[in-house]
Amino acid sequence: MHKVTILPEEVKKIAKLANLKLQPVEVNLFAEQFTQTVDIINQLNEVDTSAVAATYQITGLVNVTREDIVDTARVLPQTVALSGAKLTSNGFFVVPRIIDTEETESVI
Image (cartoon, rainbow, N blue to C red; front, side, top):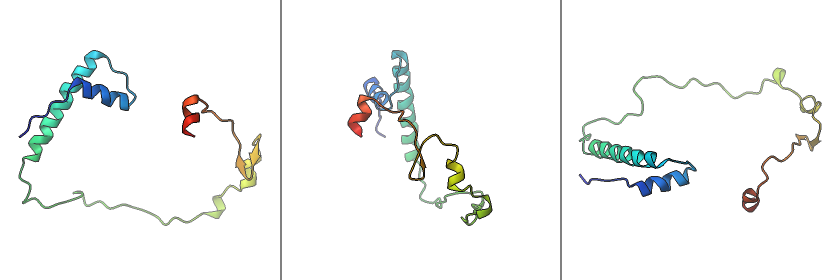
């Protein structure tokens, strides 16, 4: 089994990608915990499961679904839904833009 060690630099990179602010003590703690997690996964990968039948669930439960049918008696007409709106356009609500930063402008 190959020992994998997660370095604090890797934790910092992951935290940056996830937009998380970590304290130095947390970086070291998470590095240790990630290393332990990878060790456990490596141990599980060594277990011989060739004689174990594949299964996706064990309870025997099945999904209970219903047909997707519109109940016209419960549908709110568009004109009624829009009747109290201050501003509409082509049958839709018009609302003020709330995301307006330089960062989002470059993406849009």
